[in-house]
Image 1 (spheres, rainbow, N blue to C red):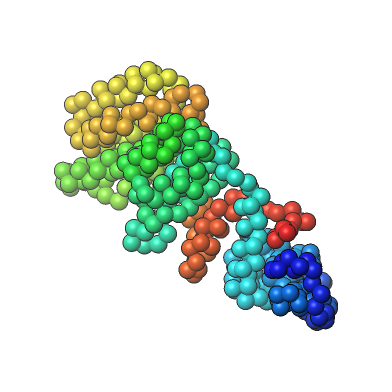
Image 2 (cartoon, rainbow, N blue to C red):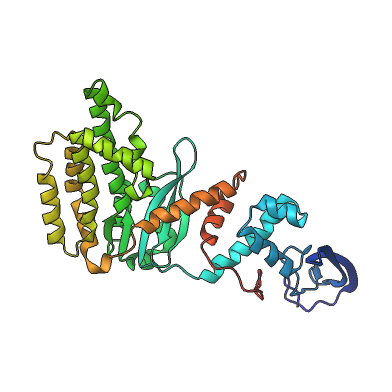
Length: 372
């Protein structure tokens, strides 16, 4: 049957000789040559070519060769795959797209229960894109927008649909107001939890400001203890070398105010271990009391910020909201690695597809890249 006019093709038949690339054999590059039937429809005048299931959507390659290239692109850069298989960069990119599109298609429709929303810089100059992750599946499900505004986040909810948006129960975000406004407007049934790592980043900045203030206040030998110790003071203790731990011990022993600020920062992480809002609030009140008479102005401003955003912090105490808060930050780190491996591509749609498909399982050996 003709796909254009719907009539049975009764035109002129002939055969066309074809040559396609296939998998290597013993290191040799293999090409297959065969004849393919063509028919010219007498009804619409169109030319139709015989459909062969073992050919890829690109008729110059077999399906299994396209699968092979797409599988290589999951662990290698496109340039390395092109050199290995003696292909052009654009050809590798096209075959990789076919592979990743089939991965996304097999993942099915999006019905997330808990999501994380964050932004990531795609290039210098504060050029951001919004990344939405499914926290239950541990993978990004959407990347888009042209910045980090409320309208950019609303693009995700528009693509998801109102019914699926109403089914979202939990959203993990930072304290950026446009993100909160978009979630409250488009996912009214979702509880908002503020990301622990963004909050602790604000506390680290407060500690660094105390270090700067102390460096300006002191003179002579007292100042020498602080100079060059920013990394030592702000790094997690388990990430420091033996020499770094010894330097940290000397620094905290030499400056009482920095010692107090450091201990307060380390103890604040206990806030997320409470299972009731009442217990978390009692801990925070004790923590605030520890700031009295300490003359730690950056910490006082940090405590005021926590007060303004307390609802989003206390929401994590509920048992149904206990999700891995580090997952969003971990996914962003992996996305940055993908960005570096895709350096040189100007196709942003390809980068989005690469980010989403990189967290999906590989296709089976007998997969079809263009199911009819």
